[in-house]
Length: 176
Image (cartoon, rainbow, N blue to C red):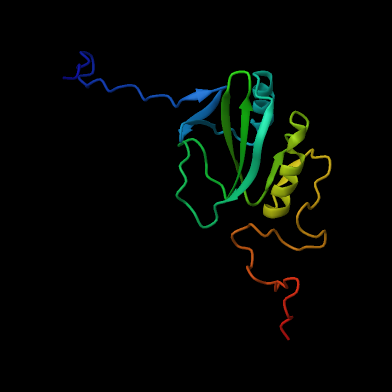
């Protein structure tokens, strides 16, 4: 039974439930893990906050290209972009893990570097740059790490032309 407001005669409706947050950032849950969804602008500040809270280790940092996949689940307030950078952190003292999912637009595929707070991210950011073309502002050496320096393109992008370069295995006869 709903209560009727005596003044307006309208039924009360439950207040809209505020989205869950942690460290002032939208929070979701995935496979038993906490997932934070910072904006690009709030990402550096959130990293500093997490570092101060004991999240001293970045376990992984990688890129994702959602060009052909629109099935991901994001909080309603988060605008999906083509690229996403996923960062997994661990707090050894609390035995806690956190995952960050930062949306990165295709037209401006740049994210602030985590290197200052997390020096171990240097190679991970270089790999993400090399494979996806996502740049990390403030990175000390944002150069290719897997592909040759003169390589054109980013091989893990969904629109990258697959199979352009024939593979020659050692000891196998060359195709002529």
